[in-house]
Image (cartoon, rainbow, N blue to C red; front, side, top):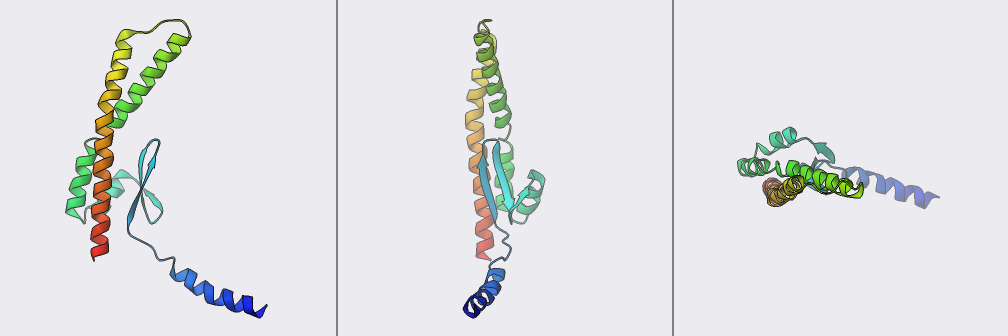
Length: 135
């Protein structure tokens, strides 16, 4: 029993020291887009911009990424319209050519925009983290 108590007594302070907060940013890629975390707390876009302001290069890269965020709108719109056409087809109403064209066009527009957003957002977070490691 004494051995276990000594082991726990020696391990506990080490565990507390390992809980130091990190200022690095992390990204989680979800089905609904990218989620940004700082010290395991979810950041809004405004909070992320405020965090990145200390590194001008990372901030400019994120501003460039934000211009491409509209791609998610086109992605969701295209998916909704494709689903609508599939439901109409299942219900026997037929396919509306105009809406199908809009759905395909919207989906095709979204692909490069979403890729560019993810690329630039990842680059901005990496630039920010590199600056933190350098100081």
